[in-house]
View 1 (cartoon, rainbow, N blue to C red):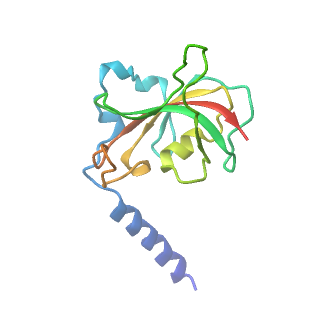
View 2 (cartoon, helix red, strand yellow; view 1 turned 90 degrees about the vertical axis):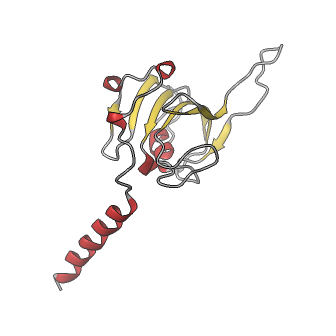
Length: 160
Protein backbone atom coordinates (compact mmCIF):
# COMPACT_ATOMS: atom_id res chain seq x y z
CA UNK A 1 0.00 0.00 0.00
CA UNK A 2 1.17 3.48 -0.81
CA UNK A 3 -0.52 5.14 2.14
CA UNK A 4 1.88 3.60 4.70
CA UNK A 5 4.98 5.45 3.41
CA UNK A 6 3.04 8.72 3.51
CA UNK A 7 1.96 8.09 7.09
CA UNK A 8 5.54 7.23 8.06
CA UNK A 9 6.80 10.50 6.57
CA UNK A 10 4.08 12.50 8.34
CA UNK A 11 4.80 10.76 11.64
CA UNK A 12 8.52 11.48 11.28
CA UNK A 13 7.86 15.16 10.55
CA UNK A 14 5.55 15.34 13.56
CA UNK A 15 8.19 13.84 15.86
CA UNK A 16 10.90 16.20 14.55
CA UNK A 17 8.63 19.21 14.95
CA UNK A 18 7.45 18.13 18.40
CA UNK A 19 11.02 17.55 19.64
CA UNK A 20 12.47 20.80 18.36
CA UNK A 21 11.98 23.81 20.56
CA UNK A 22 11.07 26.96 18.62
CA UNK A 23 12.60 29.02 21.44
CA UNK A 24 16.00 27.35 21.10
CA UNK A 25 18.68 29.82 20.02
CA UNK A 26 20.24 29.56 16.58
CA UNK A 27 24.03 29.38 16.33
CA UNK A 28 24.17 31.99 13.55
CA UNK A 29 22.31 34.44 15.81
CA UNK A 30 24.33 33.73 18.98
CA UNK A 31 26.57 36.29 20.64
CA UNK A 32 29.72 34.46 21.69
CA UNK A 33 31.91 35.72 24.54
CA UNK A 34 35.00 37.42 23.04
CA UNK A 35 37.35 35.13 25.00
CA UNK A 36 36.03 32.13 23.04
CA UNK A 37 37.41 33.65 19.83
CA UNK A 38 34.55 32.30 17.71
CA UNK A 39 34.46 33.41 14.06
CA UNK A 40 31.70 31.41 12.35
CA UNK A 41 33.21 32.09 8.91
CA UNK A 42 36.04 29.70 9.89
CA UNK A 43 33.66 26.83 10.65
CA UNK A 44 32.15 24.18 8.44
CA UNK A 45 28.40 23.86 9.03
CA UNK A 46 27.12 20.31 8.81
CA UNK A 47 23.59 19.41 7.66
CA UNK A 48 22.75 18.50 11.26
CA UNK A 49 23.46 22.08 12.39
CA UNK A 50 26.82 21.22 14.01
CA UNK A 51 29.66 23.66 13.36
CA UNK A 52 33.24 22.31 13.16
CA UNK A 53 36.55 24.13 12.94
CA UNK A 54 39.66 22.02 12.40
CA UNK A 55 42.45 23.48 14.54
CA UNK A 56 45.06 20.74 14.13
CA UNK A 57 44.84 17.92 11.60
CA UNK A 58 45.70 14.66 13.32
CA UNK A 59 47.97 12.07 11.74
CA UNK A 60 47.17 9.00 13.82
CA UNK A 61 44.35 6.45 13.58
CA UNK A 62 40.84 7.62 12.60
CA UNK A 63 38.11 7.88 15.27
CA UNK A 64 35.45 5.89 13.44
CA UNK A 65 32.00 5.19 14.83
CA UNK A 66 33.11 2.19 16.90
CA UNK A 67 36.53 3.35 18.13
CA UNK A 68 37.48 3.93 21.73
CA UNK A 69 38.87 7.43 21.96
CA UNK A 70 41.01 9.09 24.63
CA UNK A 71 40.71 12.86 24.52
CA UNK A 72 41.24 16.10 26.37
CA UNK A 73 38.34 18.53 26.13
CA UNK A 74 36.81 21.69 27.55
CA UNK A 75 33.19 22.78 27.22
CA UNK A 76 31.79 26.31 27.47
CA UNK A 77 28.46 28.05 27.18
CA UNK A 78 28.31 30.87 24.62
CA UNK A 79 28.71 33.42 27.42
CA UNK A 80 32.20 32.01 28.12
CA UNK A 81 31.29 30.08 31.27
CA UNK A 82 33.21 26.81 31.37
CA UNK A 83 30.97 23.92 32.44
CA UNK A 84 33.32 20.94 32.05
CA UNK A 85 36.94 20.16 31.35
CA UNK A 86 39.42 17.31 31.24
CA UNK A 87 42.84 18.64 30.29
CA UNK A 88 46.45 17.68 30.93
CA UNK A 89 47.85 19.60 33.87
CA UNK A 90 51.54 18.66 34.03
CA UNK A 91 53.24 18.01 37.35
CA UNK A 92 56.85 18.97 38.13
CA UNK A 93 58.10 16.09 35.95
CA UNK A 94 55.97 17.14 32.98
CA UNK A 95 53.57 14.20 33.43
CA UNK A 96 49.80 14.78 33.27
CA UNK A 97 48.13 14.68 36.68
CA UNK A 98 44.95 13.19 35.15
CA UNK A 99 44.11 10.70 32.44
CA UNK A 100 42.27 11.73 29.28
CA UNK A 101 38.54 11.05 29.06
CA UNK A 102 37.70 7.71 27.44
CA UNK A 103 34.58 7.27 25.33
CA UNK A 104 33.19 5.86 22.13
CA UNK A 105 31.77 8.25 19.54
CA UNK A 106 28.86 5.83 19.18
CA UNK A 107 28.43 5.60 22.96
CA UNK A 108 26.87 7.65 25.71
CA UNK A 109 27.82 11.18 24.66
CA UNK A 110 25.59 13.91 23.30
CA UNK A 111 24.91 13.61 19.57
CA UNK A 112 26.87 16.74 18.61
CA UNK A 113 29.97 15.57 20.47
CA UNK A 114 29.78 12.12 18.83
CA UNK A 115 29.31 13.61 15.35
CA UNK A 116 32.05 16.15 15.93
CA UNK A 117 34.68 13.64 16.95
CA UNK A 118 33.96 11.12 14.18
CA UNK A 119 36.63 11.29 11.53
CA UNK A 120 39.17 12.97 13.79
CA UNK A 121 42.60 11.39 13.95
CA UNK A 122 44.85 10.98 16.98
CA UNK A 123 46.76 14.21 17.49
CA UNK A 124 43.92 16.28 16.02
CA UNK A 125 42.16 19.20 17.66
CA UNK A 126 38.75 20.68 16.80
CA UNK A 127 36.35 23.32 17.96
CA UNK A 128 32.71 22.28 17.94
CA UNK A 129 29.65 24.48 18.27
CA UNK A 130 26.74 22.25 19.15
CA UNK A 131 23.14 23.44 18.75
CA UNK A 132 20.64 22.53 21.48
CA UNK A 133 19.07 19.89 19.24
CA UNK A 134 22.38 17.94 19.28
CA UNK A 135 23.12 18.72 22.92
CA UNK A 136 20.73 18.59 25.85
CA UNK A 137 17.77 20.16 24.05
CA UNK A 138 15.09 21.73 26.15
CA UNK A 139 16.24 20.12 29.41
CA UNK A 140 18.93 21.42 31.72
CA UNK A 141 21.92 19.28 32.67
CA UNK A 142 23.78 20.29 35.83
CA UNK A 143 25.06 23.82 35.28
CA UNK A 144 23.97 23.79 31.62
CA UNK A 145 20.66 25.61 31.13
CA UNK A 146 17.99 24.26 28.79
CA UNK A 147 18.34 25.16 25.09
CA UNK A 148 22.06 25.91 25.45
CA UNK A 149 24.45 26.17 22.55
CA UNK A 150 27.62 24.36 23.60
CA UNK A 151 31.21 25.08 22.54
CA UNK A 152 33.82 22.32 22.88
CA UNK A 153 37.51 22.16 22.17
CA UNK A 154 38.54 18.54 21.74
CA UNK A 155 42.03 17.08 21.34
CA UNK A 156 42.20 13.38 20.49
CA UNK A 157 45.10 11.71 22.31
CA UNK A 158 44.63 8.18 20.98
CA UNK A 159 42.23 5.95 19.08
CA UNK A 160 41.94 2.20 19.68
